Length: 332
Ligand code: BYC
Image (cartoon, rainbow, N blue to C red; front, top):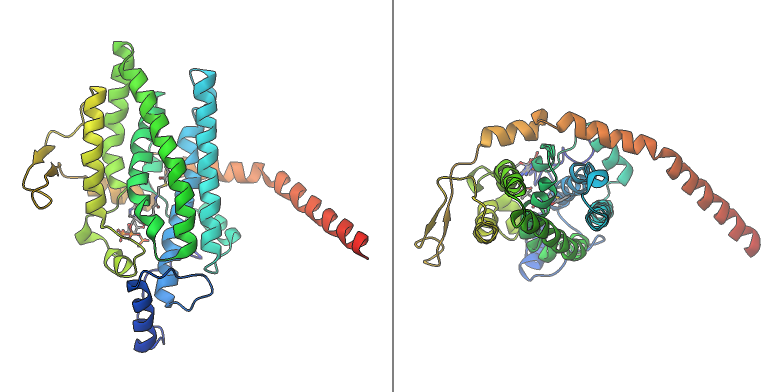
């Protein structure tokens, strides 16, 4: 385990208080921290952990939708889904590159993902059972991702913040293509609308879990917010997502599967907000610890794709070596 074992500030560093205060002053002044800047080891480790988990999520996140590319109902849908899945692969690569600036190689992170020791978002350990899931994943999963990731564009670490700007622009296209699939299904036959409702029923609660445990149980939030890696707490972003999404569900004519969901005028300093039912945290931790329906299959599929692609990597390396020799010969 190269990166996932590296958790937050461990208090064991020899960094002086003066150094830590000067670093915090830079953060408080909204300066961006760049790879060659001095930084506390805890800050570096927290970023490696979060960016690594984020990159792995993008890579594994290709699988539930990749599963439907050959079964898309039209050429237009196939093209859009293909492009979306390819974007997610690209996001993984930007993020691995951002993590590399902190001293962890892509090979190390890949190894950790393939040996099953890496964490990635729990949402990707659920199956995608019908075409409506392609709508619901785009609408809800990418919708949750945007809510969580827009603030990361202002993360204090420069390479992560810059990677997130492009990621968010693409996620916003993904969210809209997903919502448009849902809209088409909801305006279609009764059976299509039922399929859309079923996808919402299955994915709603796992999507709320994407924001992480309640603030009181979030081990890293306090320090990450102090370092301005995270700008908002897990619960604050989850609540924002619920408020935005419930209205979208109403427009579709679908029912959010939470009988306890209620608008409450008194929340958010009188601006109002939704109270929601209890999230099943037992299920969340079970999935995070590797016992979700799809954990084993998803890693096996990723490993098979990695192994199948070995010849492409080898050919690219051989070509690069040939080019290097050719250039050296011309220069000599
Ligand atoms: N799933 O102290 P906390 C995408 C872990 S990709 C699994 O609150 P933190 C997309 C957490 O890692 C979406 N584990 O942590 C791709 C920690 O464990 P460790 C991915 C979770 O980091 C393809 C422990 O619980 N997005 O959208 O302060 C197609 C305690 O949590 C989860 C990102 O990665 C979870 N859901 O906050 C479509 C965004 N939640 O490390 C879409 C970047 C928590 O102590 N990441 N854990 O063993 C973040 O914003 C933060 O890392 C989180 C968690 C809000 C997720």
